[in-house]
Every structure is written in structure tokens, then in C-alpha cells.
Image 1: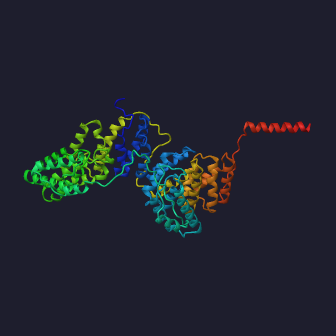
Image 2: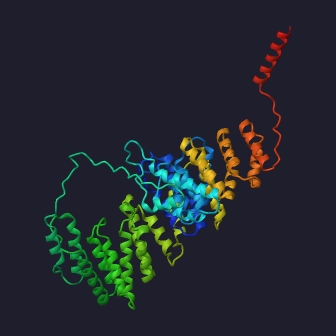
Length: 575
């Protein structure tokens, strides 16, 4: 039990969840995404949910980027398997599919997906991209123009879906003039967007502070602009580093301007390297690092390394020192907003530059930093795995095993042992999509997800799903019919089946019913639900398809009893 996953705010799993997107090979990334499925559900079972319950939805967000076809298809299954309920996992897949593929996937299927997202979600940037790409569809036919106008109107109307009461977590996104213009270009109405309600100001006098001008601002600038005296060589670099770190705890004006301090320290490191060799230069960087706090001023090492790299041409010793300094910056700058060790994805260019200057030095320095983290306190290593995976994804090491995938696998083996048990994933089963992806498969998967939102309970969501169905049957009939074929294979209730069939009856011209959809409608023509059976038969007859005879079924006992009662009553009256 002591070795198992912590029960409260244990963030370890995020190291390998967030770093999936750093693995560039889609096949490798999807194989590891499949490994993560059980862990993200198990962490919810093993913990109290504080700062750990988000991993399941985060998995779906990453899946929308790494494997969009499977994410859309599986999210549709979530809706179809739980009719009448919302699902945060499917919503996460919907919104991230829109954000990640708004400029690449088919704009018509994306527009249907946008139409059926949660009414609380909106993004003017995504809407502008999708609607702008749809402008080329205008003029194809009168029905297409009509549906483009309906689509634009509904998307524009979504920006009026603001709560009557104040809500701090409601989207504050509003329409800009560019989006208004593209809506009107598609046939939508001109309108003046409503401004978002501003957040309420804190009325507490305790927290309210009057911020006046800084009386020492000018004095600070004047003193910092001067360059104080500092000893030459190693002593001077250490004293400057000590001075700039000490300023965090003092109200007096800064002794050193940060740029002046970087120049002064950098030239002392360069002078030491040229006179005493690269080992002395590296030792001086370590001396400077000991004087500067782990939690502040670490950008100074990035500036020092980049400055030293300028003088590295033709001098391998300076190149090694510059490389070491850049790795020092990468392993000291904290990523994830300050929560993780190593700079991570935001600053991985530091590692790339360091490895380019001196690969051996960079790899040894990074290995030493990892060893130091592992030997430190238990919380000191958080972020190390993600930092290494990010670095190796940008630039693998020259030694064996120094790839992002190998590093991820090593971390997974350790973390998976901390999460034993059987994961309760419900109906969620992830099957990675073979590479390369098919654009047609993505279009059908996205269309299926959009139309599957009819399974939600809210009347507005059902209405929008039917609008999206009509839009796709008009603008993208092939993708829409493939999506409907898949949905009809599921066990929908009579109401939703009837609504979808009626949409098909109205919007599919005679003779254009595809074979796959005709097969499913033929099956529905033998349904136990009278309304479904009658409407399916009518559609088949319109498209000159054979209409099956309804199967003979034994009447229920209640019906048999009622008929016998009628016969007896008739006989009694006759007597």
C-alpha cells in the first residue's frame, strides 16, 4: 500500500499523460495512448479525486490530437451507449477536435460538430476558420445556400446563450466584426453582438488596495543603470550572482541591472574558459548556479549560454561550456507554470542548441541533473520524466535508448506498478487507428460524433443535432449517410429513430439513398415500434427499394385476453 499511488493530489501520472503529444511518430504515440487508458481510470479509483479526476478527460483531449478518428468514433459510442445523458469525455473530444483540426479537416463536417457542441462552449477564432472555409460552398445549389444560411444563423445565435444570472465560469467569448462579416457572407443576418458580462469586482475592503506610484522607481533605474565594481575572474562572477539573488529579499534599489549582470558574468566565464580550459568554465557555471535560487532568475543561464554560443565558432572548449550552460538553463527553469522540474516543451530549444554545440557534454550534463533530482527529496523529481521525453523528442541522444519513446516506456513501467487493479472503463475500448489516416474516415467519424449528440437529453441539443443532420445530408450526403448507417445500428429509442428517419425522408432526393443506409432502414422496417416501421417502409418505397413484410409475432397475453373478452361479450349479447 505504501508504494501505491497517493490518495491526495498525487500528480505523478501527468508526467506520461501530457508527454504523449511529444512523441512525433503517430503509430508510436497511439500505441502508448492505448497503454494509458487503464491508468487514467485507475487513478480516479485509487485517489480522492483532488487534482487527479481530470486525467480521464485529459486523455480524450490528447486523443483528439494524436488519433482524431478514434477519438471521434469512440466519443460517438459514449453518447450512443448512454442515451439521455451528457458525457464530459465526449464533450472534451468534441471541443478539442474543433480546436486542433479547424484548419485541416472537412469544413462541413466540422461545422456540424461545432453546431452540436455544448451550448456553453464557443470560440470566435474556430468559428471564423470554419465558416470562412465554407464560403466556397456557396452557390452550389439553392438547398446548399439555404442550409449554409441556417448554419451561420445558429452559430451566431450561440453567442447569445448567456445565463440570466451571473456565472463566473461561463464563456466570455464574444463575436468580433470579422465573424459577423463571414456569417453575413453565408446568408446569415446582420447583428450587433452582445458584450460579455464583466466579472464582478471584489467588494471586500480588506482585499482592496490602493496602488500608488513607486517612490523609488527612478532611483532604482538610476542605480541599476550604473555598473558597480566587481572583482575579476571567479570571485567577481560569484559576487555578482550573489548580489542579484539577494535582491529578492530586499526593498532597496537593485545593485545590478540584470542585463549588465549577464554581460559581466558571461565575459568572466569566457575569460576563465580561454585561460584555464573548459573544465574551469563549467566549474564557474556551477559556482554561479549555487548562488542563484532554484525558484528564480534561472533565465539568466539561458542568456549566458546563448551569449557564450556566439563565441563558440572554431573553439570546442567554449562550445562545451556554452552547451553545459544551456543544459543548466533547461534543467533549472521550471515548466508547467513553475510546478515541474525542467523547462519542458516551452523551452526545449535550449536542449536542441546545447546538443548541437557539444553532444557529449550536453548528454552528460542532463544525466547528472537527473541523478541529482532522483537523489533529492521525493517531490524534487516531479517533472523529470516529462522534461526528458520532451527533450529527446526534439533531439534524441547519440547513445542507445535516448529517444522519447524509450524514455516514456521506462516511466510507464514504474508508474503502472503504482496503480494496480482492474480499471472500470465502462464501455470505453480504445482501438488505435492504423496509419496513415484517411481523410474520408475522419470526415465520417466527425459526422458520426456530431449526429450522435441526438442521444443527449436536452431539447436544444436534440434540435441542433437534427439541424446538423439536415445540413450534412444536403452539403455532404455521403458522409452523412455513412454516419446515419452507423447510428441506426445502435439501439436508439423510437423517438430519436423517428426524428432521424423523418430528416432522411425530407432531405434525401429520390433514388439517392445509399446501399449501406438502405440496409439499415430495411432492418428498421421490421422494427417492433410501429412509427419507426411505418416511416422506414415509406422511405424505402420512395426510393424504390423492397419493403419487407413485418414479421409475424405472437400477441401478448393481454391482447389475447382482451380478444377473448370481446368474444364472450358478443356471445352473451347474442343470447
